[in-house]
Length: 451
Ligand code: NDP
Image (cartoon, rainbow, N blue to C red; front, side, top):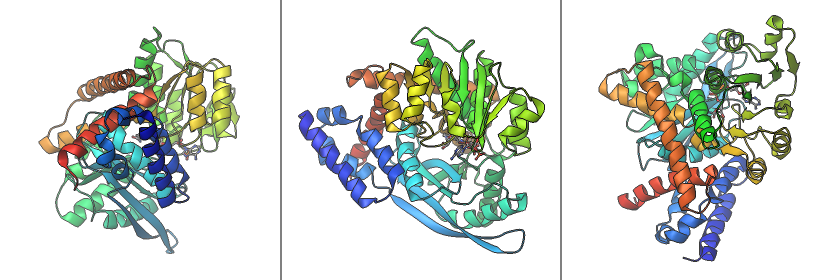
C-alpha cells in the first residue's frame, strides 16, 4: 500500500478518536504518540485497514464507572468516582493497575489503559490491557478511612474482575496496604480465596517476591541495555529521579547498586538535591514508613537543598534522567535544558511523563530515550509472574524472579531494537515499542476473528 493511503487512514482514525472522545487530552496524546509510529506497518500490511485493527484498538471493550460511597472518621459520608477500563483482552485477561489520585478521570484512565495494551504485549506474557482507579485522594487520610474506601471500591469492582477476566494491581496511591484491603474485601465477598485476582499482594498471601521492586529495577535494567549499545554503563553517572514513590525508590536502589549517584528526587511538593548523592535509606524512612513529605530529608541532611517546585528538577545537570512520577512532568523546555546540560539517556519509569515535544527534542539530539511502554514494563511483567505462581500454587525466590525480570527487560529491549530496524527507524525505541506491541496484538486479533 502507498504511504499516502496508510497515512490517510491513520489520520482519519485519529480524527474520529478526537471527535468521539471530546476533551480527553491525555487519551488523545497517547493515541497520537502511538499513531506517529505505525505508518510503515500499515504500508506493509494493507489487510490491517480492512480488518479495522486501529478502530478496534482505540475503542475500549468497556469502560465501567461507579459510585464509591464511604464514611470518613467524622461520620460524614463521602462519595468518589471509581473507574475500570477493560481495553483489550486479545492476548490475555485485562491487566493494569489502579490509581487513586484526585486528578483521575476517564481521559487519564483511558490513556493508561490504551498504553497498557502494547506494554503488556511487549513483555511476551499472556496479558491484555486494562486500567482503573478513583479520584479519591489518599493524602491525609487515616488508615481506617483508606480501609473503608478500599472496601467500598472493591464491593463494586468485584463484579467485573477475576483471575481469568481482569487482574488489577497498584499504581499511584495504591501500594501493598491498599492491595491488602482490596484483596480482603474480594475474598470476603466471594467466600473463596482467588489469589490471582490482584497482583502486588503481600508475599504472605500470594504476592510475588520482587514485585515491589520490579518496575524501578526493570527501568534501570532497561537503561543498562541502552547504555551498553554506546559502550557505557551506570558507574559514576549522575542520575536524577523524579518522584519518591514505589517506582522511583526502587529505580534509585538499583541505580545505586550499579554505582550511580542519585543527586535529586522529588514529590509533588518539590525536590531535594545533593551533588554528593542522596541517602536512600532516609528517603525510604520518610516516604515508605512515615508517609511524609520529601523536605523532611533536610532534618537529617541540612546541607541538602530543597526547592518547592517539583518540575524544576530537570534544570539540574545530570547524565541520566528517570522521570518516575506522573504524566507530562517533562516538557519541551525541560528537555532542552537537560540536553544543554549534557544528558546521555532518559528512561520513563512513569507513564507518559514526557510530552510529545520533549520526546522530539531527545530524538533530534541523539539522546538515548526509553519510552514508558518498554522501560517500565517490568512491573506488569512480574505481575504476570505473580499470576503464574498463583495458578500453580508455587512461590519463587527473590533471585529467581529478579533473574526472570532481567531477562524480560533484555528481551523487550531487543524486540524494540529489532522492530525499529525492520521498519526503517533504527535506534528509535518509541517506534520499536509501538510497532512490536502492535504486531503481537493485531496478529492475535486477526487470528481470532471479529467478535
Ligand atoms: P506512587 O504513588 O508510589 O508514587 C508517585 C510519586 O510521584 C510520588 O512521589 C508522588 O508525590 C509523585 N507524584 C504523583 N503525582 C504527581 C504530580 N502531579 N506532580 C508531581 N509529583 C507527583 O506511584 P508509583 O511509583 O507506583 O507510580 C509512579 C508512576 O509510575 C506513575 O506514572 C505510574 O503510572 C507509573 N507506573 C507504576 C507502576 C507500578 O508498578 N507501581 C508500573 C508502571 C508504571 P506525592 O507523594 O507528593 O503525591
